[in-house]
Amino acid sequence: MGCTADELAITRCGSEAGQIAVMGIDLKPGDEVLTTDYDYPRFLNSLRQRELREGIVLRKIALPPPPVPLDLFYQRIEEAITPKTRVLLVCHMTHWTAQQAPIKRLAGLARKHNLEYIVDGAHGFMHIPINVVDYDCDYYIGSLHKWLMAPPGNGFLYVRKSKIPTLWALTPAGEGMKNSIRKFEDVGTRTHANRVVMAEALTFNEGIGIERKTARLRYLKERWADRLKQNPRVTFLTSLDPAESCAIATINISGVDMPKLATRLHDEHGIVVSHMKHARFEGFRIVPNIHMTIQEIDYFSDVMEAEMRRAAATT
Image 1 (spheres, rainbow, N blue to C red):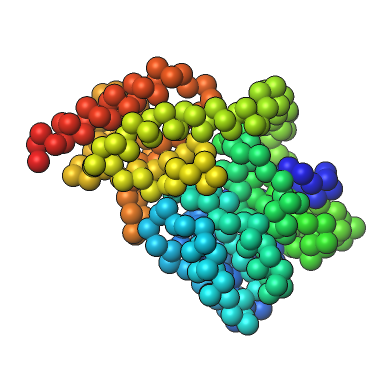
Image 2 (image 1 turned 90 degrees about the vertical axis):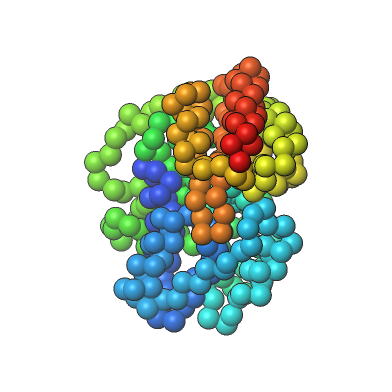
């Protein structure tokens, strides 16, 4: 992570980690929280509740259909900041398409305007090398059942040390814990077995090494993407620039009923894709992991090409 242990709280999931950050920052009526409409729905809903209950203002920037160039992403955020903006929330990689944000550049913008800066890194940790101190964010949200491959029910929240005393816990702890990161872990009875197994997941990943793991994930993505991008029916909603993507890519396929195709891929071919439906785009999120073989990746590509030939024959 790049931080010290006294800035890192182990939570019961990534959602809980995010709730601590988005619900725990002191705001008053009229204060603005700036984010995009590609950010995680659970956290947008949390901020919407604060809007209804406390009178804050949630401002969601409508970014263009992905992939969004990083310079344009930065520009849209910069233009949207007002004197009332108090918090900036962005996803390191969105769950929709793995659209990355220029998080380090945005940190400079947040510092310039004295904003609380939250980065939702649920798809960052153990997917690519990260360093939260280098990112200069105030809060970084992590999920450990994704790329760490720990059991569900594990997450973390990084809090810059200077921010710990003023960030409210979801489950109140004693006043003596006000300055301690452990106040965010004081939640009553919890399942300790999950936390024990987390150590096994860490050991497994450390044995591979994050640089080697990232390289493997990117290679698997590029192997199928390089084939399917040749088909005119396929539009990539994720940048294929290695500097802006890794394992995940989302694609749209024109001329097909995508929900029906997702069902057929599962039922007839044993292939799992995530059908993503946003107000401005629709696609399949394709997510290989390191255990997948080259044969499995090529099988996926073979099936997708066959399904697109089938679609062409019926239109």
